[in-house]
Length: 244
Image (cartoon, rainbow, N blue to C red; front, side, top):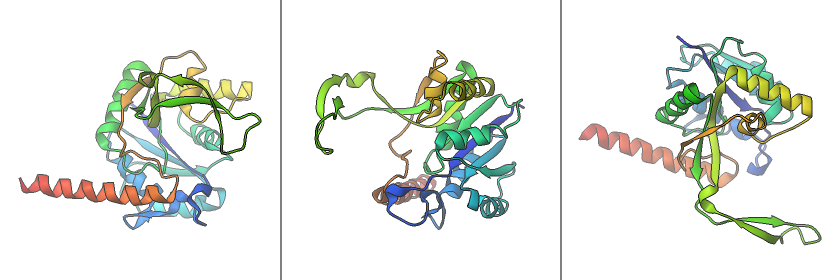
């Protein structure tokens, strides 16, 4: 059986949520988001181990909390960094070098489905690098803000919508490729907003698997309300399906 490690970066402060509690510890369905998301990922049997990178002061408490979960596979909590890339890098350093694939998923994307995870893993296994993503619906404008008020920008161009994809997670890569991408970024002093961007810098193709708007990332208070709504819809759909 091939080894597939999953990394959950969960070290953000969540300042846009306007709450004292970091967003990964806000509760959905009476459990912290990071635990809810861990359970969702664990529904995919192909994943063999999990690494959660969190705030230094939360490592011990979160490790104790996940030890009570019936995941059936190892879950290790490690110290995160000052940004996403550092957090993923810290966890990646703990991933066994014989891992065929490494999956990275935002701890605050709780509604990913088992089918989505399995699909992106399958494509990454075949192609070396794959992410979930959704087509852009709105028209995308390129702008510049020099010498303008902070709430005003000048349009410099329109990007064809058919060329735009909004990246989601999971993002899955061959273990060797992801380590090479992180090493190169460190060497060059480059910081990127996701792992795919680091792999792209190597000139390696990254493929997009269709995701879903329901695979939302919790970044502001309204997102929690939407997540609760989607979760309730899921449950009603399951009940309806069982009654047929």
